[in-house]
Image 1 (tube, protein in one colour):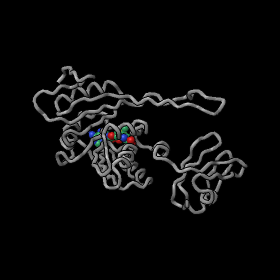
Image 2: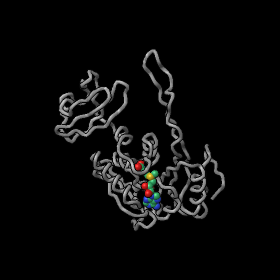
Image 3: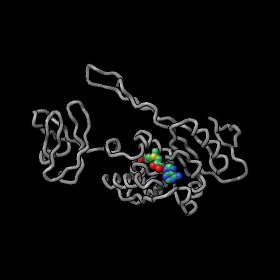
Image 4: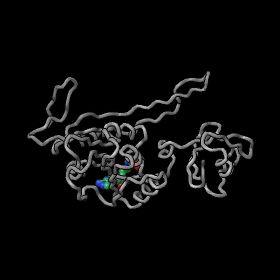
Length: 272
Ligand SMILES: C[S@@+](CC[C@H](N)C(=O)[O-])C[C@H]1O[C@@H](n2cnc3c(N)ncnc32)[C@H](O)[C@@H]1O
């Protein structure tokens, strides 16, 4: 049963999405007509509400993807298709501890939080106080309570060695925080970078040579949506374009020079 304080997603006749926080006496206005929050509560998730202009709005439960795409932003968010792949590459499991920087708008933190679950922990660093406040508000709005935010540069953090099961870095210059983050990562586990520019990827791979990091793969996540309303069925004319590269490293034991890349079939190319 819905109640004031709950989040709902309203879909209009063109399937446009609106995130609404229900409140006593609240009203949602739209050019196809308004509805009261009381009507939405009565309809419940999955129900429909009739607007003042006799149109229908569908009421559904917002997914984490809906929430992240519609919540207020400070910094640009890690796109949900990429956040899902980052969780996969980090090989996160319930109960684990993950370190991230920067918090930005809190989007990636929310995906990490869900992956590690209530017994797990996300430790998130952000050096800008305005972004940190935004991230905290977004995370509170979703109701996640397993994320500890810290204000400051991750490079200056005093973290226990080998404390984290995974590290995710969505910062402009991740190599500047390699020292802190790699030390705090368990050997054998994954560090993933999220970088919009290929020049950053090349610099990260170059700088990683000074650390016990093995470059495993560089990935772009494709995502192509189709418009299917029979008899119409074709790819959407507007698509999400380039977002960022995902760069996965594994922390290895620092035994002499490390190869920096594994070729398919187990071969190695030099670079370390
Ligand atoms: C693109 S945003 C991160 C967005 C975030 N992943 C999300 O999904 O909402 C990058 C953030 O990293 C922060 N940042 C950059 N370098 C940092 C560092 N060394 N330590 C802490 N935060 C840092 C920036 O202030 C910015 O807010």
